[in-house]
Length: 376
Image (cartoon, rainbow, N blue to C red; front, side, top):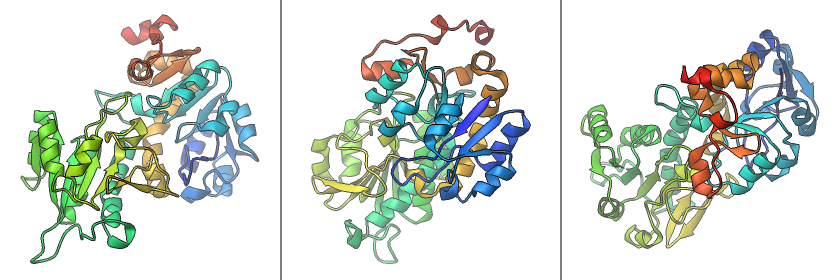
């Protein structure tokens, strides 16, 4: 198979879809990997490393997209990349289609096979979302602490306080991977941490994990309002797989939050879990709504690309090898979890949560491909 590795063009996105080790693994398996020049530079990988690993350099993104039967990326295509997508091409990347109707339409019109990292499953888990959730969860506290500083627009509060002065109140909405990693960082810095989740079993687990060093609350509008009313930092860490995130903090609730507090919405890729969320970039990361500072960067892990690229490709490479070695149809027949990653195919939306979020027609993948091997 011919595999294309283009350079990411989203604002301040320095990650890359394959490390030189990944290129070597695919090359040794008999595939041709075409790498856009300087694609790995932001993550600390030189063109020479890719060449040594067996990659073939191409000058432009157009060449890479035109050559590759499968394109391996990190982030979803943005407008300049839409014309580069072509019929029957496999696009293997984070797609986060639920809030991106235009991208969904473009992929369907161009008959692109979209395999989304974030909806691939394994034993009930999301193995390709997990590493970036870990990075984003830990980063959410770092950036929250930074923007709480007065010169950065916040309340002027040190997250951990000092002897004789209270620590900051950190409220984390969502107790999954992002929320857990955020809590680890916040507790480690000495903050007072509250985690809100609707799953009582998960709250029990978190209580055990943190040895009662965090407060846990069962989710309700009342509980959220009470918690954020004295919060210095609120982290949105809610995920509904493949679908738009629920708006758990509404605009009217912002009046309850202290002026100069910081909201970090890690769910922004799926539309955000704050009503006042809109996606920002690393170049212009924050804005105020009702006196509350919002940080809603849609590619947070792109700020630490070397760590993020290694973490991501550790998880994605086995799936990329399966898709390349077996071909798309056989790979999804052999792996039901990989099959769950298929969001668009043959001009149709094949992921129900995306279709529901966008109010478009959903077509089960099994009606387009014989998936008997999956059922078996």
